[in-house]
Amino acid sequence: MALFGVIGDPIAHSMSPLMHKSAFNDKGIDAEYVKFHVQKEQLPDAILGIKALGIRGVNVTVPHKEHVMSLLDRIDPLAEAIGAVNTIVNESGKLIGYNTDGLGFVEGLKKIAGEQLENKSMLIIGAGGAARAIYYTLASSGVKRIDVTNRTPGRAEKMIEGCPFELHSDFLPLEASEKTLQQYDVIIQTTSIGMFPHIEDSPLVISDLKHGSIVSDIIYNPLETALLKQAKQKGALTQNGLDMFVYQGAHSFKMWTGITPSYTIMKNTVLQQLGGQHVNR
Ligand code: ATR
Image 1 (cartoon, rainbow, N blue to C red):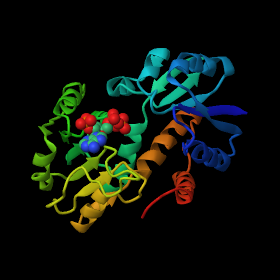
Image 2 (cartoon, rainbow, N blue to C red):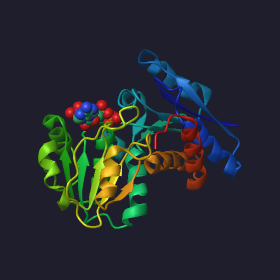
Image 3 (spheres, helix red, strand yellow):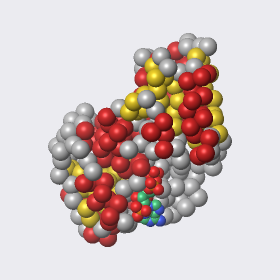
Image 4 (cartoon, rainbow, N blue to C red):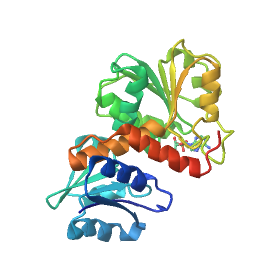
């Protein structure tokens, strides 16, 4: 049997085990996927444990995505640029770090925006870890125009300046960005604002949007945030964070097994779990 897992702190509510197990079952792969509660000071030992126990693949979640990098044998260039690892592949005893968060987002976005993203003008709300994964992955896949709005200007400017891929980006304060929303084909919300239980909160007020624009929020609890409700009322096509979560997992699964898992089975497993939790719709 092949062993996989996810390390984080806290980890009790992670939906990754059930999601991956549904995919292993579906593909007839003899595998187990376990939640490992690892505290910061235990991280080096936990990483050595992956090698010692022959664990084939591991997802890394909060708060270890950055710190884990110095403990691995090699880091994929995209994960290096993002500065965070969410997937470890054990290649015959060598641990390689990847980041599939941005890849998961981009795959989900292509489903509603089409394959050609290069010439779409985009705005990212936020400049934290999730924003960086999405911004750098979009830039690496050839998107030429991505502006950034954030509460703290310095953080956004650092993210823009640190991008190794060529593109045009301006920083806008949150209030200023509210006045220019109609310029964008795609608006991407990456902060935790609007997440359960603060479901009435929204990072900005939407007045006018470009005809046919897409508003994507990486939150999936609730499935429709206050921002997405506003965007829908203004005529936008909206997307919640479920696609990003499922596709980041699907990318990890493919890296570990070489097999593309069923998106539908994974998504339905997550939806079922969310239904059992506190989703407010
Ligand atoms: P993650 O790794 O999940 O992206 P993070 O690195 O803590 O989390 O980043 C959170 C993002 O949400 C940041 O853009 C943060 O803005 P700041 O850079 O100004 O801190 C944003 N954010 C979180 N709470 C916020 C709030 N109440 N108002 C405005 N922005 C907020």
